[in-house]
Length: 371
Image (tube, rainbow, N blue to C red; front, side, top):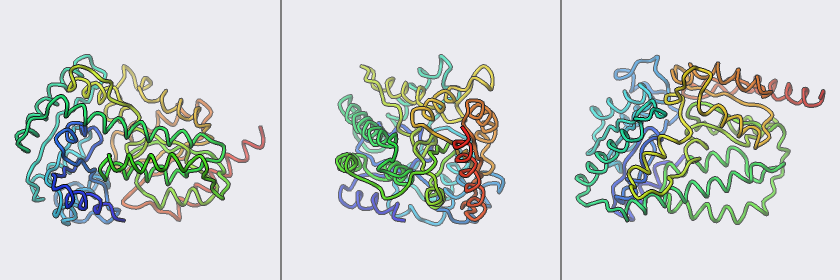
């Protein structure tokens, strides 16, 4: 686990500023335009006891663990700033407590609309992003030009495009990349300079056509839900007869699936992307519970990647996903995709999950044989 080393090395080599963000609605394009390195604050899969005085124990372990990492000083020697784009109440509190109790020179809270499909959302967010750009300019002491914004947009779009190309290989009968490897690739993109990540992706794309894995892919699975960077859980499932061929969560495809569409007004173009992207459940509002924007997208992914079963993951006490999961499960099962639910805490109880996942995989295989 060397998640901090890349940013530390970047800072030592380039002497630039590093900003940590909690939620993937953070507009990284603007940070790259200002020559700032954005890195995502992720959990350490450690007991978040230090967070207890600042956050309720009944709030999600991911948000509490993120705060705990800051309170332990894990970011003190390289983080220059911290920001949060409005998502859920739990991450909002993690940011607020960090702002007070963790020494970080620069802090910013971005008012990201929750009702992203409202006709007022895009102009509102463009205004907020313009204010954010101004705050960044004042902090770094330089003007962010249109050319700089174009550079930031290109860095992000190139990274998104390259990762989608890698994901095309996951459609194969025997993918040359495991789900664990693919999701590790996405985590890395959130923790290192995307220009350097892009070069690694280009190398990977040259290797994948000739790469053969000495394993039976078994049951083709997708994972859907809240933040999931638990490598041990993914490896466990892929060691007992399954392969994760696609996913929808903010440490997977949902993070990079949509690009910024070029526009003369760069700030508006960025705002459009973050309102139009595949949404998090905290922003997936429809006229009724059954008209969620991303449900058809998830079903499309399942069919495109020939998924045989879905693993629905949820951080314990995660309100948006807790409200979302029952509807999503009915939707997927109603379309012929069996589901298995896993609740994450600080770590996943692998022994209990092992038995349940093994039974789930056996059930899918038995149903496939009976058809």
